[in-house]
Image (cartoon, rainbow, N blue to C red; front, side, top):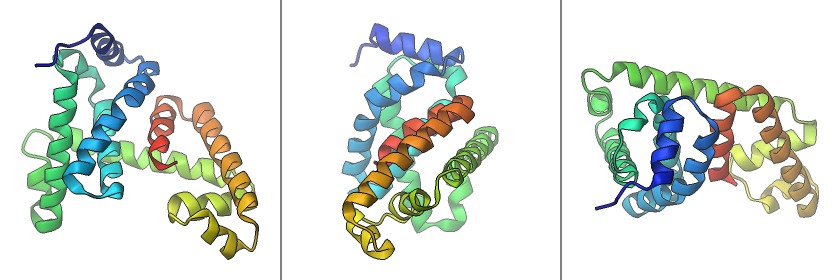
Length: 197
């Protein structure tokens, strides 16, 4: 059985007290673990990335109660498994989604999750809207539509190297915007952006 390490205990206590700076450390340390576990279960890179996002959004939403966790890897493992299984149920039984995901008593957390997801999306859209024209086009095609650099270059009639430069500049600008205007939610958004490099 995993023995809770001092650093894990410290992360959880600090985060439960509202110290958002440790969230990035926790995310950097554990998101490969969550991703690889989700990938093994789903055999799908996009779904595994969505699961990672859901796991860490829930960690953030429930941060005040994290100090009570005694085995962080087991907690993450269980949450990942539940989210994957719930996702499978959702695809198979759309009408029972609410009952499967949010049994009685969890309405508050489900509402917080949905609210946070909307805030993250709105913040990211504001960051993208602040990009210069060509950077914005490259970013939207690459990050939001999933096109490869070659396809973006062809669509915009520019070189692959130019696409790469625009993308690097856009990612840097988006992160700067999130850091400057997002507060704690910006920190969460920056961490989640790492999933979609």
